[in-house]
Amino acid sequence: MNILVCIKQVPDMEGRFEPNEAGSWFDEVGLAWRMNEYDAFAVEEAVRLKERLGGEARVTALCVGPARVVETLRKALSMGCDDAVHIDDPEAPERDPWQIASMIVGFAAGRGFELVFTGMQSEDRSSAQVGLLVAERLGVTCATGITAFEWRDGAITVEREIEGGRSCTLRLKAPALLTCQQGLNSPRYPTLPNIMKSKRAKLTVLTPESVGLEPPKASSGNFRPHERNAAGVILDGDAVTLAAQVLEILETRTAVLGKGGVR
Image 1 (cartoon, helix red, strand yellow):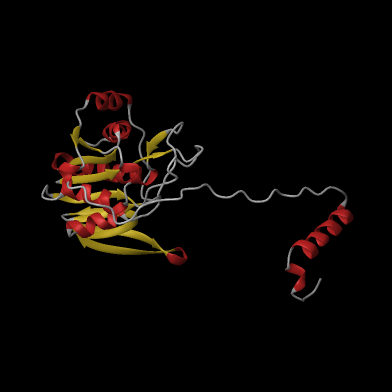
Image 2 (cartoon, one colour):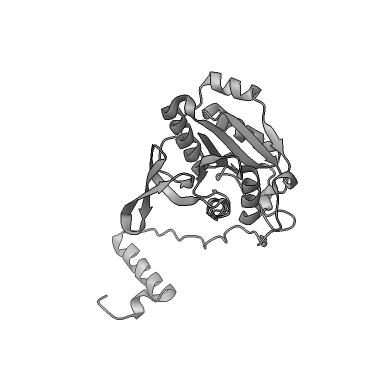
């Protein structure tokens, strides 16, 4: 059984994001990089399935990005993936979902992958489109945002969270693509022997052109941080004084007390 898991390297969300010179995306200088959180759930589920199937399964990790993403691919190998494919694309951070999907499909088509796992979305762009586009272009069934997974003789059972705190169960057949979200599993910490082994592993490196990179359908622009909110007000005094100050603020700065009702 062949399993493909698609991963992305993203900046640590605690970093300081500033627009690049073109204003089209953020400046990468000074940022720390790691595997996308949702993709870690995808890797873990793929490896768990491989372990349940014994020697019948092989997991390939695929990542599109510049040279720095090699470390994230080696993380996937240390978690239990068997092979790693790097589509070496320095422009990947600003590619639109259609272009990223076109490269994944260019690699995956015709290779007999019965299951494709991806993260539900990336933490930087949060478009949640790549998995859907890959499934559509491969012509396979797709279930998104899964929180439970079961495989039995080619039949797949998954659970998804839906609105209102409810969930639903879906049954589908392979080949299929599944996007994973928090709650599906707890990604493992790689062991030291596996980390050392992953550092020696050979990666397959491909160019965007060799896997059919297509023109974009959309472009990003005017990247900017959130505008800062006005500073808060600190009130001092006893309870009577504080109450009078709050009342004054509500009357002069808001419309809360101008709508009638009991005061």
